[in-house]
Image (cartoon, rainbow, N blue to C red; front, side):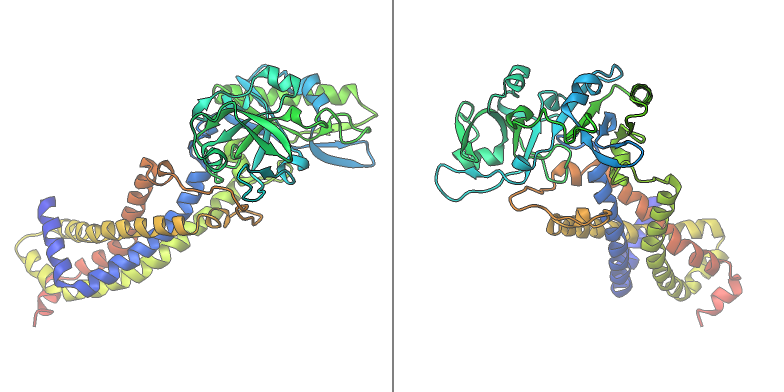
Length: 437
């Protein structure tokens, strides 16, 4: 029976090319707009290379210190790392990253071919960073704890930077390049990630000890104020909750110990990766239900408005098919059977529109990848010059993406076709047959 419905739907599609074309185009645009939003958040939340452990990753990025008169907000110092921040028990791995203006904003590579200095994205990290993020090493290995402690100038670079500097990704380990006129030895080459995975993205990864100031606190008033942020890898949700409780307990203990001098506030950190996507800073209030209402309203606008337009088209089409439905009723076809036929016929058109919508969404994402993924952020930003903001196959062709597109097609079909078809089929047989005259 289903095969017969689809065959009839294909025949009607060919008989009414104008209606079918408009219906498919309208559906395609609605699906495309919705899928673009879905793709944006899929890339931000899904386990994609090299951030495959996003569901088990937590971040501690900011801290607030006050003495009752003045408040200072920053990251943590090296002293905090040594005293307590690297000693939590409820975690599998802790990685510290150091923010240095000297490297992240003002360091330039001097290529050997003298083609011109350029500034690559740089991260100052520790060896544990490569145990949290699943980089694939094409050659070599990460720098070691000994390299970190000694401050040796060694680097892990990405394959695209290796090709730019040396023309190849093979035989690169052991070679040197000039960064701010200081030579660095390459110890490993990894397959580069995308700028769309900002927690891990860089083209050069250096031990944070190459910065001479990494041990210094930002202020003498608060010894734990510095430029270090922490990334945690946990085993599961239970360990994540235990880690958050442990951090609260350490905060309470430190505040009691330094009562009368200063107080520290870490808010609800460490935050999960999902929360960090929707909450720009840990000090911001986060209301889960307001976000649900926001996305619900967005989905309503993106689907309901096109559904109303398509519903009018289907109602007009059903008026022209009243005689056909009347004849089928007179031969014993029930209302439910006829309604099912109409829904299957429209589902075929909706699925064709869904395929068109996916193609439009993919094309728009590829063309606008340097700005589209930041469109819904609280603060606008753009891709820095030289950064690689590619969209990988696992981002676009994931099973969850196709499932989302199919569900949207079914939902749009129900919203647009169910009500006009049901109202039309409620009319008496005599009225339907009279339309034949």
